[in-house]
Structures are given as C-alpha cells and as structure tokens.
Image (tube, rainbow, N blue to C red; front, side, top):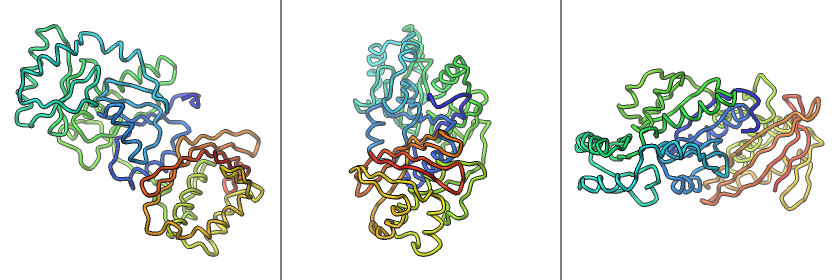
Length: 370
C-alpha cells in the first residue's frame, strides 16, 4: 500500500467460481485500478482454505484479505496479521464456553476443523431450524456474559462470532484505520451475494453491487449501484481498445492477453495485427528471458507467430498481478508486474519489469523475467 499518496478507491471483491469472469476482472483491475486503489477480498474462508483457493483459481493478490467471516484481517502477499483487530475481538468472547453451549444443540453439525478459528465457531444447520436456534443460543450466551454475533448464510452455514466481528465491521475498522492515516478511501464499492455479505451494504457511504446469484437478505439492502466498465480481456479487437489517459500498464496487460490468444490460436497473426502490436512497443526495447538471454522486443513479438496455436484446444490462461508503474524520466515509465501462466492445472510465475515511453502508442525499454 506504499504506492498510495492519497485516498484510495477501495474495492471489495467477492470470489467468483467462473475463471473467465475472474480473468476478465483481473485484466480490468490491473489496467485501470491497481495504481490508485486497494483490492480487498472479504471471504468466509479460513486462511488455510483461502490459500487453497489461491492455488486453484487465478486470483489476484489483494492488498487486504478479510477472512473467516470478518474475524481475521491480513495485509499484502505475506498476509501480515492485524494484531489490533484480534485484540479488539477478545472483548466478552470466550470460545470454550461457546463450544460447550453449542454442543447442547444436536441440530448443529460442526464444520471442518480448518474452518474453526479463534474468533469463529462454525456449524451447518437446516434453514427451517436455524432461526429458532439462533434466538435461543443468543439468549443463553448473553446470560453467560458473552457478547456475540450469530450469522446465518447460504441457507446452511451458521457462524458464532464476537459482537464486533463480521465482514461489515471489518470493513468499518479498515476505513477508520485509513482515515486515521489521512487516507480515507474516496469511494468504496462492495460486492456480495450471501447472508454474511449483507452487512457490507450497511456501512455508511459504501456503494454496493449485487451479483446475479444473490439471496433475499442481500436484496433487502439499500444503496446499491449499477454500472459497468470494459475489461481489456473482453475486447476482441485491440485496435479498438484505447485509453484517453497515458497508461503503460494498460498496454502491458494487452500485450500478455495477445500472447495468450496467440498460443490458443484465437488471433490472426498476419498483417495488420502484428504491426499494430509492434506499434505499441519501442523497437529498441529488450526482452530478458529468465535464462538471461536478451531479445529485442520486436523480435520477441515476431516469435509469437511461431507460437500460434501452440496451446490450441488446451486450458491455457495468462494474467498479470501486482502491476505498478513509475515515471522515471520525462518520456519513460518503469512498469513492474508478476505474470502468471496456467496450463494443465499448473500455474507458473514470472516476474516482469518494463520500461515504457510516455507516448501512449509506444512502450520503450527493457522487459525482464525472473
């Protein structure tokens, strides 16, 4: 988050099981939002479950991960834990008492061990029985001096959390923390479809997006917005994919999308398409392979023609992550990112760096892999 010099445009995204949609979002985010916005994943998954998902899906690296239904907050790629949030949740919370009291309800089936967390006790229960159990359990725990928040979601999952926990409360905590640092987000957009997402929509001055499979409890929330933006991945003809403001990162995203389509035989390599791609990159730019071999960027583009169809009919995906850019000269930008390739369920990481020209039609300099 050191890249921010002022208020971020904070976005909270909901995990999406459709890889095509995820990849489209990835390209959109890295092209237009990564440079001045914060990406927050807010999930009911435990840290272990979340890490497993990252190995299965083409997820970007978020700036903040809110896990275990808002009971755990971690920052960056290393998932540095927010100890202040953990301390806050300890107020009037006794996990042993909660486990003992919930064991008196035979209708509650404990979730797997990896989903049980220090500030989260989780069960499965039929929807027709859930409401009555919630009322009785809440009353019992209150009499024992505990202050809890019981959340029911997806028609099956029941979570017992500290009163101050939950996805909405975690978001409110983050916004307060940013405000104290003088970086209150200029705009905050939340997305969700489940009962444990509902309170995200209740945070003041937050805009919401309801996804297509949302449940009734989310529909009842107000202050939802509609609108769309176009991901570079959704543009079939890159000659029509232009930006009004100089954005070298946008061109880097398009470059690797072109590479993916090339390998999958989804683009015509002859004539205008190849020349158009070259026009975006400075002819003296250099591509450095992980082996250390250097190659002129235009020669690298020419080499794509030999890769045309190399992954045709195969599950081959390419995406960039953690893209950043800095102007290091009057007409030169340094662009860095991580580039991922997924082929036959194996994900390979390449670290990329690119020097780019200020001209929106030319990228200039050196690309490195490592």
